[in-house]
Length: 168
Figure 1 (spheres, helix red, strand yellow):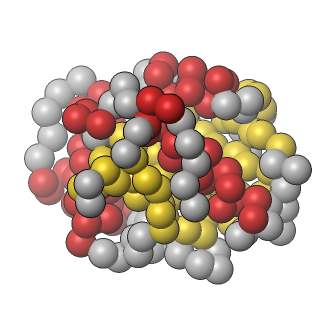
Figure 2 (spheres, one colour):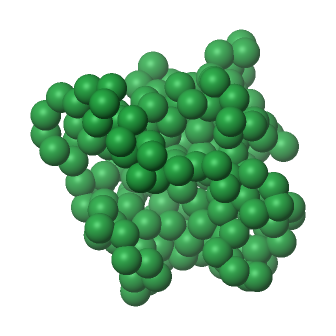
């Protein structure tokens, strides 16, 4: 399941077990970056461990979700998760591109692959996500992919913006 973006030459996206140590490393990097950006200060392993415990990702596995990893030359450079919210709706979550993989089309590749999985495997008719006001790049990415801002669909204390896109 590879989506093509000419800037993403050599990158592929495939399902990967969220329980795998490689996935755990990507999720640690994801939360480390989120904590640092949100609080504007460094973090440590204990704080990241606490967030990982508060925000488990073990549901990002079929049939209720999926976890995808982007790679080039076998080396992971990003990830995205999907979870089923209801019969017609999937949620895009845990979107992360490592610093060394940025500006190469990896984010667009991940979003495209997530949409394909949501539509073709999870049979969702729409995909939703939430994000924060400080994640300006993420909001621009989603808007560029056709996501439109909607009313809040969850009560996440870390969400400031909610988006949705029809898939069919």
